[in-house]
Image 1 (spheres, one colour):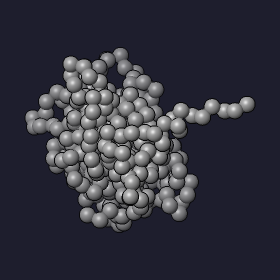
Image 2 (cartoon, helix red, strand yellow):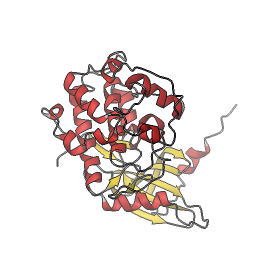
Image 3 (spheres, helix red, strand yellow):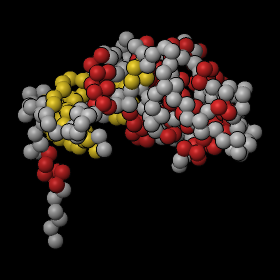
Image 4 (cartoon, one colour):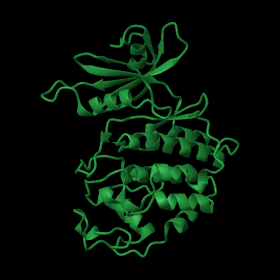
Length: 323
């Protein structure tokens, strides 16, 4: 019995991009509610590109705001640790972004390499973390919050191991004093506790918490805390830190989603919790110190990217990105 060819395989050779017929699709990298990402080769060029096709629902709102934000930020943020946009094209049905192509995202890199100590070691983690902080510090210096930092949204080019921030659809400019923003941001496992308690006047502490979660994940080889719902994530955090109080999270009782009937946990402490997780790389005291500064429950006490880059943890960093 003959197997029917996959329709997507058949389509690739005939795929026509709004960017022009000089781009030939070679692989579909991913598909979601936003649209589809293709790996493509440009004719006459050995280089690969990632073409992101964003659905353009022609309704009263016109072009999706997430697409406009992503385009605006990518055009503005020229930095070695931010994915570069090569070209943009529009038509009635979708928007296309031609981006530099990277073989890995950080999640894929962790999964592929974590059992290879010759590659996946403290030196590698310090290199990735230094570049991540440099990229986010550049965003924050331009008053931009990423708001969706997670390993899947961080690309890594295997030609030199350069880290690239990507997926800016939920990013936005913030201002001082802080104004209320939407709570519908950040993947659950990387979501700061104040957001899960309903706070919407957040600032850079939101991104710092996510970076701290990624930092822990690089050592463990698996996510920091994996709740299956927002309340489960919140309760698992309390089991680590203890039920929130005025010392750990000032004003917590006034937070919209705080419930006085939350269970009471004393908390085991971040360091003890991580020691019980048995990660792929041992965590030393200097690394613990930086993790605790990033993963402070009180967002006002979280370290900034600039200060984190000057932390003793990076005294011996060997960075593969040339700044």
